[in-house]
Amino acid sequence: MAFGIKREEVKAWKDAIDRGEIAFLTHYWLDDRFPGCNTVTKVGCKDLQRLANWGRQYGLKKEWIHIRKDGYSHFDLIGEHEKRILKEENKRSHLVFK
Image (cartoon, rainbow, N blue to C red; front, side, top):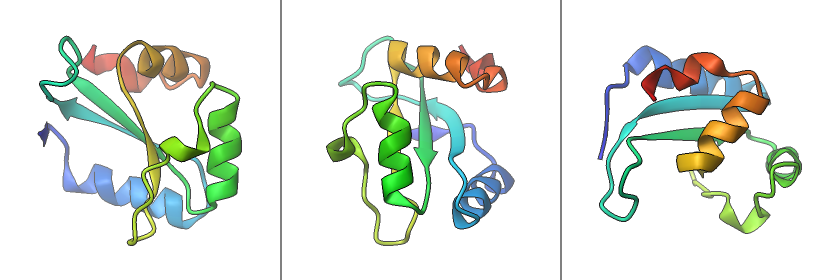
């Protein structure tokens, strides 16, 4: 279940994806399959090859991209991988949820 996210944040994320950027969106999220995790970061890009190449540098597999028909395909970053990648990407503002 996602919560704690504003419509403007989702729009900004989608706009960045539409511009071909690697875009980050972090929000509160709870799922019983991931105990102890309370956020998810969605990293998207309309250029799927660019997104796959970006993910590869962090050990993410192309097969893990959540392909969406609406064009907002993305990786879901959770837990320690999420924290590590956000720090390496200098996206510290996304860590305020932690």
